[in-house]
Amino acid sequence: MPESDMSGHIFLFAKREANSAAAAHREGENRSPEALLVERVCAGDEQAFAEFYKLFAPMVHGVILARVAHDEVQDIVQEVFLSAYKNLHTLRDKNAAGPWLGTASCAVPLRT
Image (tube, rainbow, N blue to C red; front, side, top):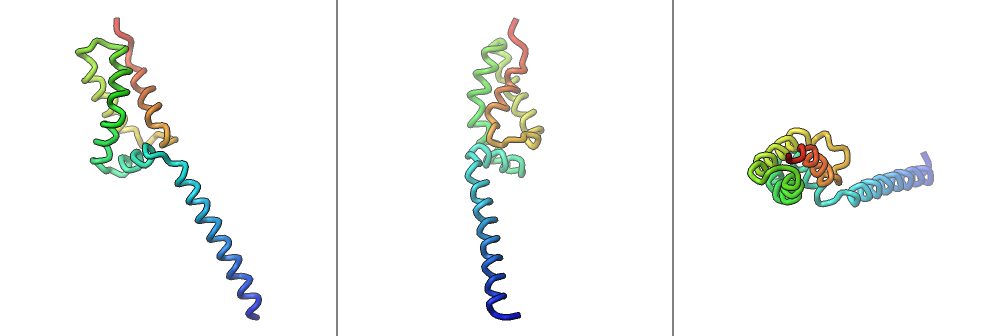
């Protein structure tokens, strides 16, 4: 094969690699810190779940507090996070962990 043909193939390969790297970089830009945290939790990182709880527990607590008696809130918060731990892998958009937890929290029946 002539040298000019080889150099053309090398440039084509380099261009393809650059496009792949740019696409991977763009995909990484769309992940929020929360999404990265969710990925770590899904990978079994216990410290990440502690961070996840610390980040979202106040919101979940507030939503539940508006719906049930004060003395029931903490137990239900624990149930929401236990369910989240078991089902976090089903979350399609890892950037939407907060709204997903909020929706789960709203599933708690209203106080009567």
